[in-house]
Length: 472
Picture 1 (cartoon, rainbow, N blue to C red):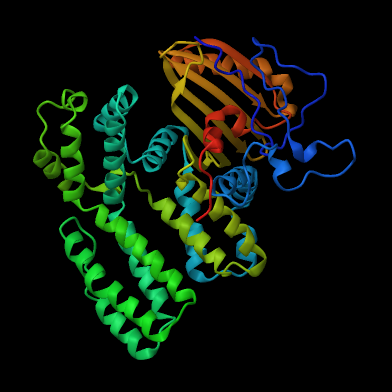
Picture 2 (spheres, rainbow, N blue to C red):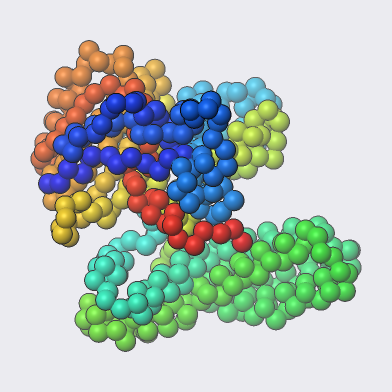
């Protein structure tokens, strides 16, 4: 197995660790060796870095979309701190702030849902992973194979077009909720007579379903959006309402793109490529369409009730219903959660808050299911994981792992005060791996004085830093 746990130096400007002068990382050293951080490196003249210099001149600026994404990654430790505070205190600080009865009930229900035994953790983890990746199963495994072997730009573009339309289709209910929310927001900026007309038009929209998609799209494109365009033209209102109408148009475009017929047509185009057709020789576009009509996408995505409760609590907190002092904290939590939706995020990231046998635990897992082995010329791929978890009254742990063909490499950082139990930790890990029929080729167990940076564990996150990088 390759030396996969050797961590590369992350892009400067991201991490919160310090590079110690004189230390070098040997090729066969598997431990983390303090990547460089400009925030803690002084210039010779004593002045602080500014502007683009903070990014190490790597082409990453905070005025760009990618720069904003990198900044969000830097703030993830803040998300962990806030979630730890919420889980460890049972949100007692919010109750003291005088939350409403509805929010207090959601808080109580949330913590009841998070109480679980070790045997229940597996199903909880699976549901979270399913919710983080809706494109899973034999069909998408096949598409990943074809994508990796594709020799033409046309085939790759066809797969990406299909995945985009499939994503829009599976998000249909959510998009319709957004559209109705956009219309309600727009009504707040209109004169009464026009507002009543818009309410009447919006009332024509049906609850989302595969069959209702064409009718809803027609109402939006032929009645609602033209009416709003005429309203702006007549009133010359160039303020907030124009931004809301633009957002409505964007959501409408995605909703139309997710029509099941559009998805079936994209699949039909893929079947015209021999490399794809030989993988599904007996499948037709009509059969694929019929299969889609019978899919419950919310159930397939592993939607869980506890997520709804958490979002309701965060929404109340952002609105100030948990006290003005907590508003910014809830806003930071929401921003941290939204990073998973970024187009720049090439790895899976999930949160696992739980109360395990009465002990509050907050964990984050980063997964790259298609990690290259790193050996020159090798086509082997494995699964790379970075797991961070904090247990109340125990401390913070980092685990970095690489799994390939039944073999595992592991690097574990534990709290300093557990140094006397290092041999027990090592023994326990070996027993767990053996119980699950995994051979441990490399195991490093050591005190974790600093958290392993995500940028160091997954340098592919920054592969797009030299691509077109603008804010629209």
